[in-house]
Image (cartoon, rainbow, N blue to C red; front, side, top):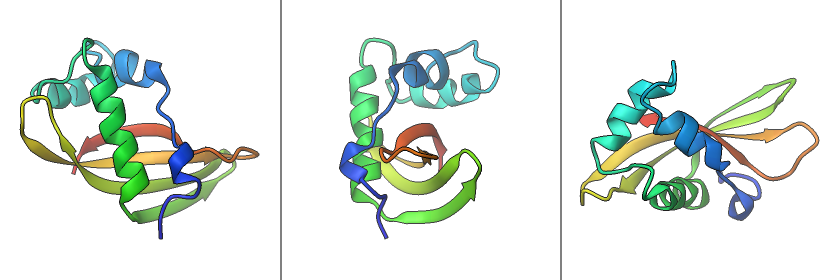
Length: 110
């Protein structure tokens, strides 16, 4: 099974710069260390956004959970990094209650 409306999946830009690549965010800084070690930074966030979106659009769902906020989907995939290394990641997406487009929540090493 694939992510519903997967071609409309989007990554809010603050999720990249203020969270996933932030070296000071309380939760994101450990993820930032991982992503930065493979060449991702503020100058190439579009590459990370493209890679994450590609995982959502091409890989099958591994897990689905529902809550009052919406339905979350866990999808594993591979990113081709700026450092030229392929890394496996787990991504999480949500379709908020009352919405139809999947929104990026987080990513971390698989």
